[in-house]
Image 1: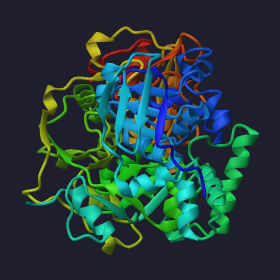
Image 2: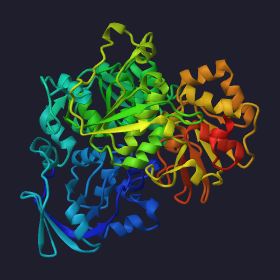
Image 3: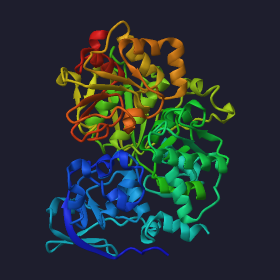
Length: 167
Length: 419
């Protein structure tokens, strides 16, 4: 039943600043789609031509405060998943994005320390089981998602969780 | 130690005796709203293989964002939503003629003090204008609430806002909120509840309270409360099906607040949010003279009847500058009818406005799109890049009064000279 969560996520980082809103992640005109592949074609395109293709070269997004603020559109996290991004590490998340990411099976980690330390293009490794991020020879602890909520993420999202629990 | 409004409502809806910030509970919403996104929740329901709803009477569906359908794809999606509503006997279903979901639900008496309301829209915080806990969620989570009746919620801490005194002429609730968002930032109230008090509140109309509760989302608020009073009761009398269900929830006098922020309303001046963040606010004096191509009067923030009246008073007997397209979208059918009967609509049209059907309109990119380099002034709640068209266009946000004054001048203008 569903993809279970990987326990370690490693890869190259693309770095954003503060207040990346969900209109930037996926514009309202594309909410006619819910499929990750369709959404990914237009993810972050407000930032310039070729942006979606460029982001596919990275594995992990790192951002500042309030990532995913604004609209409650779930397609923001779906679009990021569609790009092949495996996790988002941010100083903080807007609450709607935080919920949507969990419900979508997209790994999210809160770590202002990693945001301050990491540069674009660098490698990080997220150890989900132990709540640690490794970067440039240092380790940063991060707060775990509450256990009751983590079950949703571990089953790959809310749809899988419901499939497993309602019937 | 006493409890805040959010703590009390979440305790009631989760069957707990009392709760503290940080606790996670399973809460059962009274209303689960879905708008144009409804078809997505229907798709998610199919995907998980569910066929039964926890309680069809808790669902409310309003087709507001792209109304009427402008492409075949939208038409098909709306058809899916309609068919679902019919199949499951959803009584609180409103089609493309009704207007913006938030306003429609409040006008039709579907929201009452103490309710827990979730929906596919971040501006669900607006229900706090009537003392309900409203908050936004994604479409799959709406499906989950449809099917299981519940969702997990974390009990928030609360910031207490104390509003004292009176607005000066030409200054309104929108200016207050732009001031607060600028001061606290886009996440200044992140994950937190906001409660509004002060000697200014009794005089604050329900329409102004809606503007407050709506815009508070733009500082990250999880939920917002204007404690119910005689104005709330007056608004809901004749709207609630059963007024005996009017049972306001208040904070205890010794409730615990994370912070207290006091504002003297008479200190405020008209404010404008500059591109491309709502927190990028400036006093009107710093942006006066900025050229505009479009002026949009509408949205759940400021498309209410009182907002149209404020604009009409300024526009009466005057002409919109020929360089400006003034778009007016009444928030709901009720507002459209009221504006028609009172002559407000005629005043707006005679001044040069284009009046559209009720709905989210230009705020959701449904009409009123802008070309490269164009500038729009808008009474909506977001000015994010590309939200109203080209990524090379820009949006400024203001009150209805500033918008009307600016439409006349053709550039951003101080409304106080019209008072």
